[in-house]
Length: 107
Image (cartoon, rainbow, N blue to C red; front, side):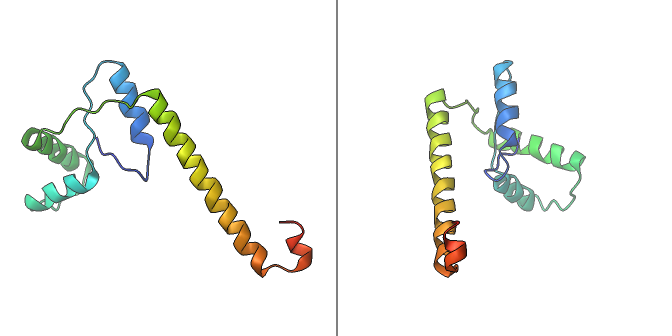
């Protein structure tokens, strides 16, 4: 399956399949795209993509995916939350610098 940090839906599916005993391989979409370019593949349909991914897996044999331990997952969630809070603080600080006194009192 494709794995992308932009869309994390793949993690839920990968974990579900792993929990039910399936061997899961997660591949960066850029690797699949590079493989397609090396094959001079220009067709972009679901069927063509599935054949391309199967060919990639046969040729490249990507490593099996395993879920991270819970403590690592929790730590990543905490770090992500901290980054969001830092971003929000920066946004509010920037708003405060250009705000009038009436608005600044509400920030």
